[in-house]
Length: 329
Ligand SMILES: Cc1cc2nc3c(=O)[nH]c(=O)nc-3n(C[C@H](O)[C@H](O)[C@H](O)COP(=O)(O)O)c2cc1C
Figure 1 (spheres, rainbow, N blue to C red):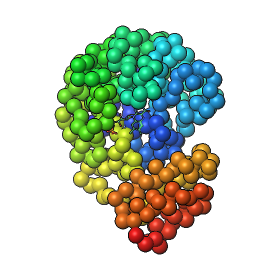
Figure 2: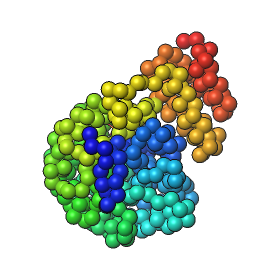
Figure 3: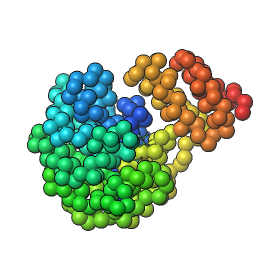
């Protein structure tokens, strides 16, 4: 795999963390960065919510200097709202002094509550409209690149990713990430890499391949089958941020021990407490920690205990006891 790719004149590494609503928060992004993720993207942020002044949304979009390069992803379907939201993000950056590498547009989210508003992967059904969104954002953002993440189509009767990619490139998109499934396929196993190859052949901006990368071999296969410039991983990194090291190192990679996995779960939890406070961290960490314990002896027991823990100290105790092998199976 190539080591670098260039977006709007800047060089970046080629192994990316894909955006994940509900999981890809600042604490997880930090951990992935420490394990070698070359480029991060925030959870999707509602353009409408930003424009209407929703109080919680800016914190979802907040980025830290230690996680750069990081893109902020927006979802929405009105060109003016998307452009305005993008400029709001830039004014937040003017305040914090931390700028995103790009503003990314979500054209892939399959969730019913998102597509029913015409957002996310519903934009695959309205190519001219998707193009207008990118054009409006590029006009509003000046030097800040706009990138797009899309699926290969809405369903098998409309496999239009090549047309979509050409349109958004024409509108000024600086890179395109393709999740090689239709909206209808949601996350069913099996991707169609040939569509990423077709996009790569059709556009000249960098193309990032995404879908079902759970190992270094998967990443190599993605590059070999598609010629993509970089890869983005989502589910494979959950509980396994070592995946980035594995992709970078290939056969030299040594997998983490049980103790290393649990120690990282504890650190992930502590970062969540720092970011979100104890109450939210205790609730939200359950899913994140369950991924680290998946497949380990005693993982069902630890999950059960985590579900009843109500305080940060409770969670710390469970993980420490598990690390020290004090919990029976
Ligand atoms: C929990 C979860 C949340 C996701 N949230 C987003 C999101 O906010 N924006 C987006 O473009 N894609 C989102 N995705 C899709 C992923 O970025 C990625 O395209 C998809 O999971 C396929 O990659 P994978 O096989 O490596 O998981 C999400 C996926 C998951 C599993």
